[in-house]
Length: 152
Image 1 (cartoon, one colour):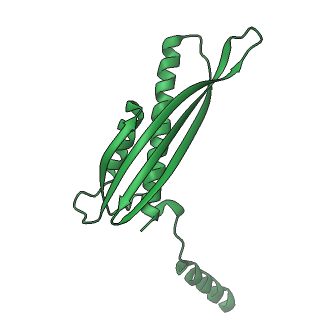
Image 2 (image 1 turned 60 degrees about the vertical axis):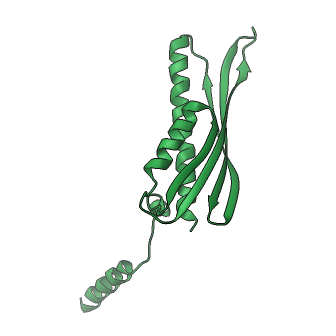
Image 3 (image 1 turned 30 degrees about the horizontal axis):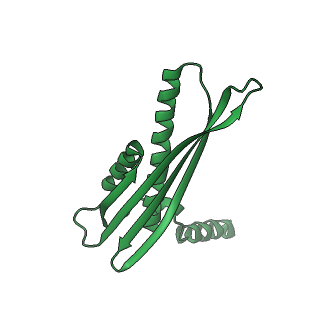
């Protein structure tokens, strides 16, 4: 009985001192002031990325990161039926980022794609496409925030 109690206490003590950290724990711990110097491309996508970056910026921080980005949104035909009528589309958002932190400069791109089927109602399809754009922009913004949080 004493061995069991000792074993349980030892196991709890061992687990308590484990250095576990979730992968995304640093995502909301950006300690930099983010300044968007310029952005070009699709207005809707750029506005969402801009708002997400500003929301995660620490205005009182002394460390400044300058970001400029260019967004290209394309919608292409993915499939047609036997009659030649479009059935599927693919949306593609490519965002080229330039990050300047101190004397260091980094360029990289983020590419997001989404496939969807054509709808019979044009109004619903337009609204659905706008929701897709918002989701892709939020995904791109989260990727850049995660990248900024992981680089020190």
